[in-house]
Image (cartoon, rainbow, N blue to C red):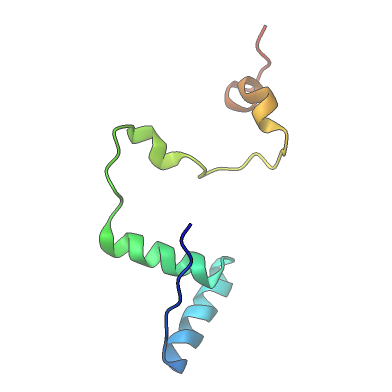
Length: 76
C-alpha cells in the first residue's frame, strides 16, 4: 500500500465517515472502493485473482489446511 493524504471539506468528510461507519469499513477503505468504482478494476491475466482475499474463513491457520477450507474435507 502507498500512504497518501487528501483533503475534504467538512460536509463531505462527515458524509463519507458516516457511510464508512454504516458499512463497517474504514474511511480509507471507502475511498479505495469509490476510486475503484470510478476507475474500474485493473485487468489481470488471471481472472480468478479478482476474488483473492474476498472471503475469510475466520481461521488464522486456514492456509495450513487449505483443502478442508476449499473443499470441506481433508486431503487423503
